[in-house]
Image (tube, rainbow, N blue to C red; front, side, top):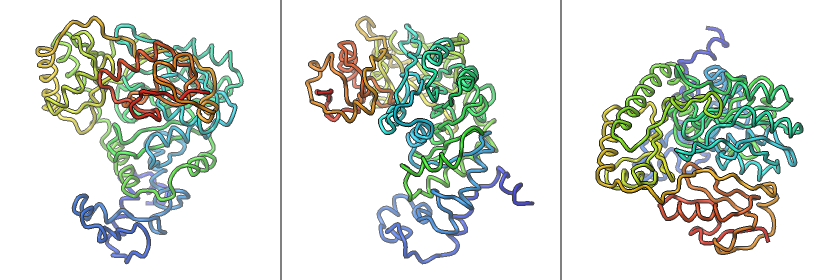
Length: 486
């Protein structure tokens, strides 16, 4: 087998193989980490196991270097690029937050405009704080019944491009947390025709590359850069991610951007998990995600048969703002039984020992992937039926809207670094916010730096707090005060 064919053999996992060889060498470690293959921290070794801590090692010649890969990490990246249909793939050990930030920083600099939906993850706006780019928001459509934000309409993207011909990039969620997809192929074409890059946040779309009957993946649609959260539906360890680039992007430039913020001490636990998971997806992904889709479709039918709940799916597709739907997403609207999503979330965890992904004002999301089994779905369906029977109440008085159009006054960077003062929550109305406020998950800001605070937003924050949403972002951990521009 020649070297090229060896590199493209998807049954290989070069980082994993190199670590196995390293383990057999019985190297004496006079380098970091200080636990020295676990001997120096017996409690940690007992907890994680000798096999795990034994490969928690530093970069060295046989194991390559994540900042400048020339051997086994480079091979792993080439295999990942081929598996995902990308020109280049970067192994990321700072989570998809790091991937998203590197994607934005690779294409935007201070003063540049970037067109994006407002229902992005906070990591996107964090990147704007870092680089000084200016957001041009395409406010997503909202489903009034479900109270959720949808995708971007083609005509609204076209309008934003026409009104901002100097923008450098368009960013798209593919999909949203709820499984909603925009018309990515059309948006890519509009961006490219205008001389702009098209970026995609595919934190929740790893399986699009391997499953059949899935929405189009960003690389297949022709996007220039995409952030793929392998640890979500791809099966790798938490905090491991991929950044994929297309042929119009300089891989060398992207590597330099990544190295500005990513650690120089890349975790071989995370990198090997990416390597092994890519192999698993390439070899078994089609079969695996076909089974996941079947389970999700079955669960939707069973939950909808309970009454009161609405497990929504492909019937929402309208060819534009809901151009497509991720069939693996088990999103359930709960407001019609008189309970906020976060209340159902808490009951499932506290009384039924069922941990779902998140609950917000009107919906819950059960995240299904390769490790789920039908018997556990049956348990979830049964619990939801019991919750309806035990807790159903009048739904009047519940908030329905998840998304509030922002009033953007200043760039995120300008507001974040401005002179500020702290005000009690209710006294902050009318001021410009200098920090983030969000429910996490999903991590979509209710307020971001540079946006005007309104009474409607404050009502939402207080309601979400009262219902038990996990609120993060502000300097004040109790969110009784907000930092605003002085």
